[in-house]
Image 1 (cartoon, helix red, strand yellow):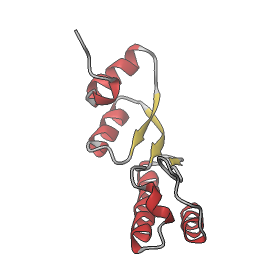
Image 2 (cartoon, rainbow, N blue to C red; image 1 turned 45 degrees about the horizontal axis):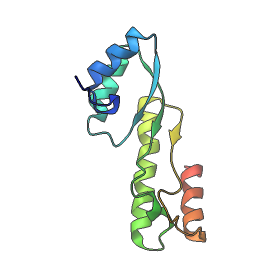
Image 3 (cartoon, helix red, strand yellow; image 1 turned 45 degrees about the vertical axis):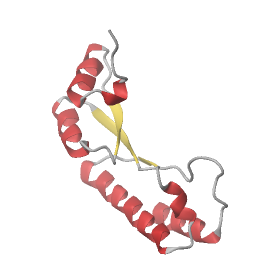
Amino acid sequence: MTFPPPAKWPYEKIVKSFKENDIDRTFVCIDHPEFHSAMKFLKKNNICVDNFHAPFREINRIWSEERDGDELLKTYLDCVDICVKYDVPLLIAHVSSGRPMPPVNSCGIARIGKLISY
C-alpha cells in the first residue's frame, strides 16, 4: 500500500500523527489553500505554530524594477499582518528561488528593507 507524502495529508491526519509522536510545535505555509481552517484546528489541538512560511514561488519578482515587485512586497507585508493576527512571532521568507538567481539590485534591497522595517 502506498501513502501520499505527509505534505499531502489532511491537517486532521497530520495533527493526529503529531499527537502520537509527542510533537507540539510546527510551522504553516501562509499560502496553503486551507490555511485558516488549519490554524483553527492546530489551535484547538494545542499545537503551537512557531512561524509562518511566506509564499516563495514568485519571490524573484522582489528584484524586479517593475510594479509587480511592489505588488509582491504588499503580499509580504500582508503576511506580517497575518503573523500579528495569529500571534506568530516569525515569518520565514526567501530572497530568491531557483537558478539562475536574479541579480541583486537597489530596488530589491529597498523592498526587503521595507519588509524588515514593517
